[in-house]
Image (cartoon, rainbow, N blue to C red):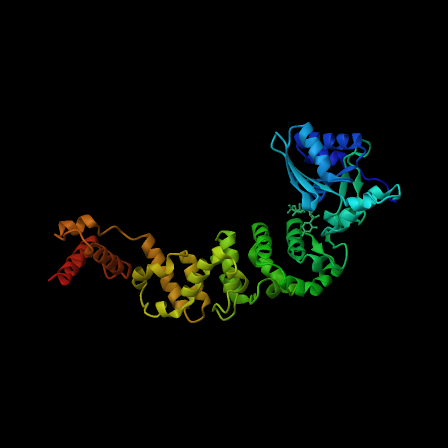
Length: 417
Ligand code: CTP
């Protein structure tokens, strides 16, 4: 065995005092009950890297739920048990949350098991994880507090900047790990090792079997951390873009148009993205995306926007004024995107841009009060006349407030017997 590495100093430097006190208390209570307790998962990686992380995951070699119940009642924690998973979440009075899990008790409880079976249960738990850098533990038992448990050379990979799976079926078991790998590559400026990258090809069928929700959830985490362009480029390079987003292609057009939608909130972004990435610019099939109920409405609007018929009659920016209903459920940015993407309508997109700019700076040359002064009785004509006058302003047929009044007056006369 290699020599023990102790991370107590790193823990002191990176964890808030309150968390450190809880961890020591957990370790001591575990020791009293002859149970070993460990800090595991992403927080261990971040302690080594000296980065802040307050996601506290604890593994107990034994019955984690029973242990969690004990300490929760001892120190006034609020406990939620997830019996099916053998885990519990405790919220302490100071607000700190802690997840407590059992390392596989079935091994631990086997009669006549070897004395060192305790560490093998932890090893099992760690072996089921995604990458070596996330598969380390820190002992909390007072006699070994802060000792690093590193069965799979996670520390070395962390120093080398390497994302490495623990076994060849890791991505097949959980293909969202491919997306996690990309996220960690970007976050830490790391890279998957060659073997890990090669395993991805075997997971394509498993990717197809993933649920929409899991994919979107993971994409949301990703787009919160890295520029979408980089993400799609990476997925394309790994040859799994269309496995995750059926029909998606990453090409120059898609890249050029991306800025239009990157400003959207990420859920909306993720919903629209696969549609926009389709080469033809038409919604071939909403596929994965439309499965989500709350997105269906949105997808319908996009369909509508991509439908040429409403755009055909648009010749000047002012023509958009009265068809605002086609655009309004989505932002103008998305509408522009749809029109641009649809290869047949780039000129409409530029008209829409012009319309948007003009609309934002529309001078207030005409109002209801003006129409009253012109002698028009309040009624349904108001909306029509104001809208027609604004359209003429946007088309620059009218260039002063006097002209606007004249225009409105002429309209009033033409509309009334
Ligand atoms: N894990 C895994 N496979 C997954 C997701 C998670 O093996 N698909 C394991 C990893 O060991 C991970 C731990 O569960 O460290 C906790 O998951 P999560 O909180 O999602 O990840 P973190 O590594 O903490 O990432 P982040 O820093 O983004 O929270």
